[in-house]
Length: 252
Image (cartoon, rainbow, N blue to C red; front, top):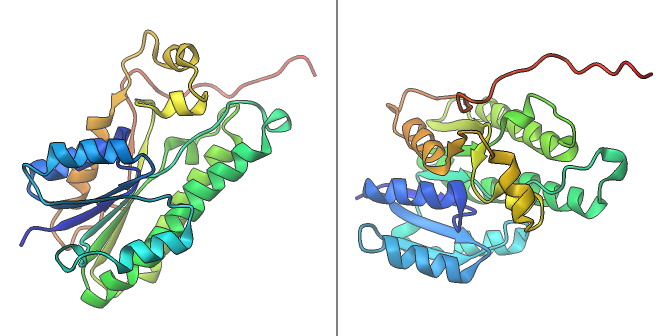
């Protein structure tokens, strides 16, 4: 029987691209996200080529996450791969001017949501002595930038949590990978700027960023290595993006 992947935040961007990539290879899909109409459309698209079980879920709701995992149909219950993709960035203001609710939302989604999904699914993987957790981090978890404050901190958490999971899982056949994209064109900037199309478009203007399909290919590659191989982390940036000199303020 084909393998099963559980993908959070499947309604757009990396999540939807991962769903299409794994469906094309015959994996069974468990897809969740907050937008019912998008889930319905994705289910309709992919169910012609792969078994799909989709349902609305806000990963910030611990009780809802636990209930959803318990309620999985038998043919979808033994999850082989969890893709913790649900996440977001909000705002680009410096810390002293940020909106606290944005920080709450990023922590609740990027950290707590990832924790809730991992904790609900991981025991089954350990019991079956097989499985893989792939977390979608970011280069922002390693390299700071102005306005990245809480977002970068949440992705640094994802990096370290992934490493600590590997330490805890030593002696099992459960694998853990952190995928760290750089600039990628998706709804990421549209969400960050709260629907401002103009600001979102400026982020990618004149550049050739990664596409969601590039990250989906990376996720699929990591998930399909031989069982004895664990890809700890993959840092992926477009050729148009690189590192810069340290910023210097000469006015203080």
